[in-house]
Image (cartoon, rainbow, N blue to C red; front, side):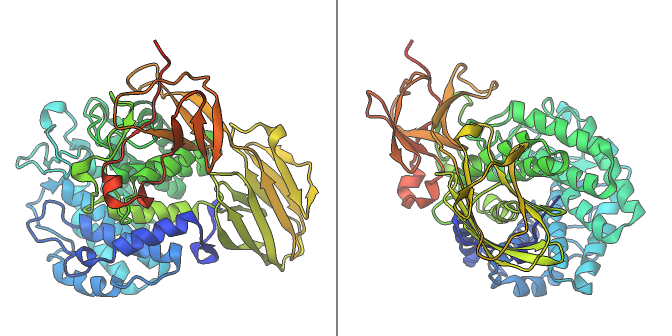
Length: 554
């Protein structure tokens, strides 16, 4: 199963609006070259440059809008590379800067994504030089990565700091585990280069990563999940079953110990200081890829909650992304961290990939099957047999679950299956599905309803099912203990509240007010989705505070 090519997908709904808002933010002066290049003394060589390049390259494909500064950035890049072809200083043999490796994960990703989109020999040469000059010399040293607590510094700020001492040949970062982030780029480079020596380095690094106790060492969850994306890519490339097993077990560890109440993240294992949208984007992609490779629909439901809550609340009115309070880490409230309201140096740029993948992951192909796990407004050109289906989709999911699909053009003359996602919280008897106004008895296959026929231009599909408020217990690791939350489909509901915690019983009756808003019976409490921070005026967003965990009267 593979996602539909972005070249064949034209989003026009909420995801598109968010992507364009982020794109606009990333073309303001602080991201334009030469300002986008960091000075030589910057502690994260390649990090900002790689992230913004990748965001432009991916957003351009998701929105079909040309990036204004991509060519200028690429023209200026060679002047910033050192004699060995990468950014930052050249260290003595046998010494490695964890943050330099991390930053070049994004540089490699950007160049690989650009090469896949618009291949040019010069791009491949730059990729080769980074791999030869920076990455391959670390062969034999990943097994020595400083993985003992006494080798690390735990007083990290929101921007990680590099230690000024060597620990087992590495200059460690307070963003613990970030040396492995380069694998995200190295595994994609391996798909292009196929070098055996690069595979050896990747496999050594994955083995080292797998052996580390990430909770004991208080790994940064962003580095943990970015590495998982690399592990999954290597699984898809090399087919090693152990890589999929590692991805599943590590994601399960993250899910059980570092998710917030709104499906964002604790920045470090065991240290819930703030959320970081970089990691939230990673978790969304990891969950979606795990569904792709295992078919387990629980991963798909996780991905929906991450997208519509953690990712959604993290976007700011200017299109950027910022850090929030860790809801459920000693607090029942969700609010931005005012002092890091926008993390423009990292999270705003990572929003580019997160939103691109959200658009891309809305349509999947496997043989003569199209799977639709998300609903929005979009036009899709879908290969079908020897022909093509042109589908127009209209939906305001997840506020409502009504989805309309119109077949605008159908050149295929063979049967083709359209699979429509139905979440587990929906009772099958409540679902209505019609083709050309005729109600269909359809077979449910896992979490999907399958419609198979030879489609004709003019065919119309309408899927609908009710979404109502429901109560769920909070994730077991969250504190205060014994709390629960209220949901509308995959949307977490919150209560605007600048005061003390308000008590609501789990069986409270709700009166629907429309647009996924509810009033709790006998109170003036109105609960609404928490995904709308980016629509608020700046000052209102800055001081937003919503209760998302509740308890009954004592």
